Image (cartoon, rainbow, N blue to C red):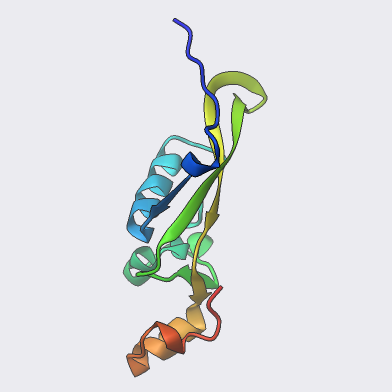
Length: 118
């Protein structure tokens, strides 16, 4: 069986997802041992539950703002060995500092109050 794959034209190379979906995808990547994953502390839902010190970050993903994913390039190797085609992607993720998150949660302020939004 032959499988052909190519990256489509730019109109089809993006998707938008929530932080909850990205968190689930990240958990799958960690379980499967992929070499590209995010620290669990980056996700607000994990941060609020508590994570190990090695998983903590100084920024968290801001819930409520969509995350944009652009499929960047087809890739055919895993750890230097030829494998099934897959796609590398670039994500635009809205984050704020943990310090500002704590400050704003105590004031109960909406998105426009975040100065460290990236």
